[in-house]
Length: 414
Image 1: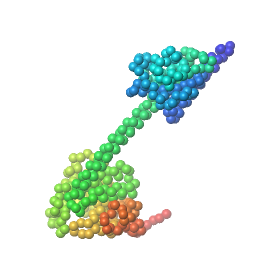
Image 2: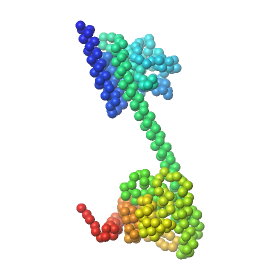
Image 3: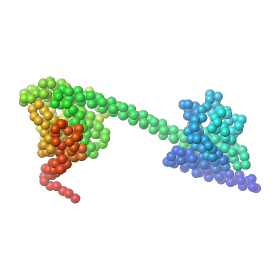
Image 4: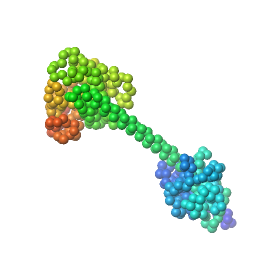
């Protein structure tokens, strides 16, 4: 009678272990947390004293220990396998007995494992693929494992194999994402270096243009930050700004640096840099939107008084309106052959006064906001030598006046 009761207790214990192991295997917990929970079920269902979980590395044909209970087996200990073990593990699909006489056939002479008395090995497989193994130690009363025990361990093993498979897939996905990000970063770095080189080549046409494209890119990106654009859009507008004057590479150097008023044909040559630039970039596929529109239309104005197509601001993408303001601000605050540089207050005031007639008022407010946050110190590298930076009070006043102009002198506050 006692034997029948013991058997019933074991059956019930086995059902309980399987019932608890199933939800654990498919839970959202961490890998080691789920593995530890399942390993406790392995120990409980057969009343074993010790256990260790191994993960199989098919590249190096070795096991690595990942978790041990009541055994001094360090995590991540490598257990290399020899060629003679290949056939053994390829054929092992079900739990089997271990003893001092046959353990070397599975693991060689690995001291980290063979110094313990392991009585059972449970292979962990998924769709025939070997993922790992569980070694089970002695049981109470030195009782050997029965076929019923093996069935329970096989069922638990399939659940642990599922956890291992999911972990392997997650790690593989993580590695792929990391590799893709690394590739993306390298591509982005290459784009950045290429754009820097191109902008330097563009600005080298004239000493007065030195650094112009890079500054316009910085101002345009700053406007994008103030307007809350995504990092992708900011990267795109920065790239477009670096290329906005690419058509000037075909303009005669003497025309660009001319100090006297331009003749009509000379002005036409300069203004045509937008059309030429459009032709240059039209054959290039960029990873950002609106680069071509920026190159062609950065001299268009809100009232359609710009060039080359005399179109209104509502027909221009936001990136073009941003580069138009950034380009104008840098041009005003830079020395030109025919005039001195304006101060930042003077340039910002004039641009604000021309808004919204000529420039997008929201974009101009974005510039003022960015200048207030980043460019109110004399030592700022974005300032030309000798230019006095605008103070926060001055920029706030310009911003307030622009707001009144746009709202018809109606300013609302909470």
